[in-house]
Length: 460
Image (cartoon, rainbow, N blue to C red; front, side, top):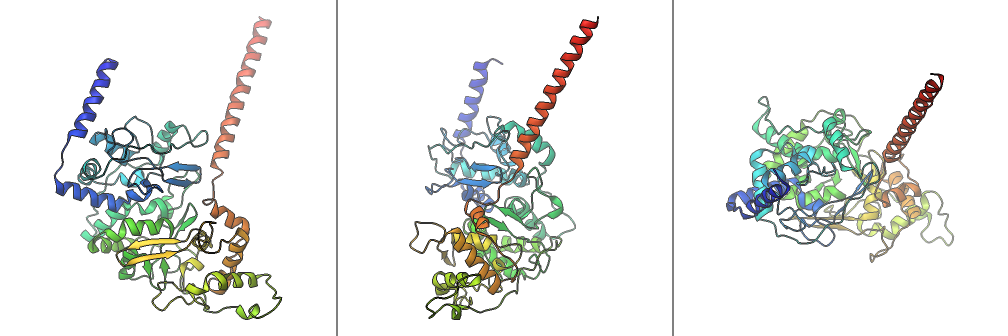
């Protein structure tokens, strides 16, 4: 096949892809699958152009920019055939053959059935408005900027098997497993990663750091996971982002609630809950029923020159910035729209990252039950007080001591890490060092070989 023939073939394929017409019910099914997959959260940037890309994803190896996945034929996926679309979603391979990074959860989307994939393609080609604008390009440090390196990663860690029902389980359990493991890609955030950023299967859903937020343990462990939750509490959390007296969704989970879970049917939410409740328990630090109401305002209010060392500074910052909503004793409001800070998973469990992230970034969650909003105190642009790293650390230490586990502390440096987007990985430096050492060893071997050959030649 000549180059001209090849180009003509791809042009014809693209033309055929663009010319297809799909029935409305198939497009609507695809819309539901896209909603369950929460595609819009990652592929919509700050300009709020649905699926238009330009959304920055903070990863331990650098920033990854989500692409334009509208049916634009100039900057999106409008020229993708259905097979190319499926390969991108389920295998992480673009139409041009380049590999995607697993920030795109193709390792989970591989489980999407052929029927749902067909519907998903119909929706993106016919139910999404094209946006003819480019998205910012991802540029990771060497060697991760070489996308072909993902071929080896995929061979080691990617499972391309689609979902298969477990005949020993109920229909509801199987539906929940499909949604949680596939479109919902729960493990992408909630399962810890190994040295090469692969999911640790032995710690399935045991909790992991995702950017500035920590996706908590959601196994059936009663202390560290959500084994103490009732099914209706899990359903309520998925539908609204709140399980009263236990937890509230922030960060990427708030996005998942707003854009995805809150829009699923009650039956599907119940199925996800049934599956999650059956996930084997993995022990972790206690997350619920910790802390008590109280305040330390007597240590500084009305005192001309109060001692604001240790926890006193945090208590004053809390009184000035937080008490109006969360209560002078941390009790929250009666309806818990502003939640209590004791008996709260963000002031207990594994570290204080979520409390710090909530203070810095705020909370913004929209569902049919209303708009939940907490202003960000880590930016200079909001109408509220902007807190520096030391102030956020003092506030966090006070909250953890007064309302939480009484043990966890953070430093200003810890806060700076969360403000910058979360912990980074030393994997880039390690791999670069290994490559440099390997190259040096190869050079030494080559030089030694040349020397030996020259000596032999002289001796001869």
